[in-house]
Length: 271
Image 1 (tube, rainbow, N blue to C red):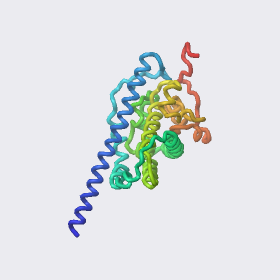
Image 2: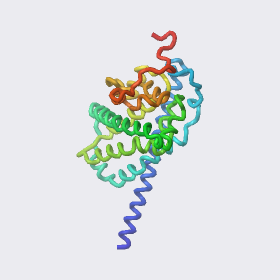
Image 3: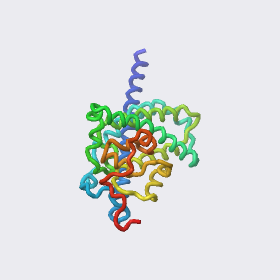
Image 4: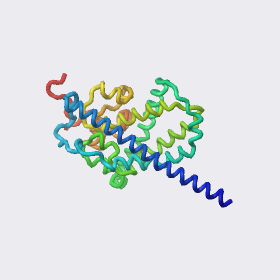
């Protein structure tokens, strides 16, 4: 009996350790996406292909180094999900069937992002309306006051990322586990689109279609989808544009804003 209990405790400790490693892996993945987008957009900006949405805002945060707060915010939240996934790894492995079903991967990505947008809008709005929660959890994320960059996508309190992403994606992982089979291509597409839209919404640049269409895997071509400037406007005026991927919840709630006085819609010489 004692040896059995010891084995159980040891196995649970191993699951916890693998959960920490998995969370760190998510943090590394997110940091890699941010650096990829940083260098790509910096390249386009220095060559004049893109411009800033609000040139009147001093550009200092954009040139800063990666923030360790972003890394820990994205690493700690996924630890429970990573631990549970390791515990259930045999079930995930036995049901994994890789295929080149691009249409299915796009449909999965779009569906998850539509559902997450509703969840995010509800939680995000709650954070803004309940002042104690805003001060304790979400205020840090708005510390840039519109001087946003790809390095501020997860900049803020660990609880902020945990609340807005953790419970929802725990349900996504559970859904995948209970399917007769699952395609890892679906997960790859979802990670690319979610991270791409998040980075573009925090970059502070006016991006052309040839950037935001592939960056979102076409999700931002959906009617009433967000454009990169919409979430930027949220950082200029937090009362508006609280959704993450689409605009319909803000339109229904009356919190959608298309323009802002500090956003330059069209630079001289643009058609």
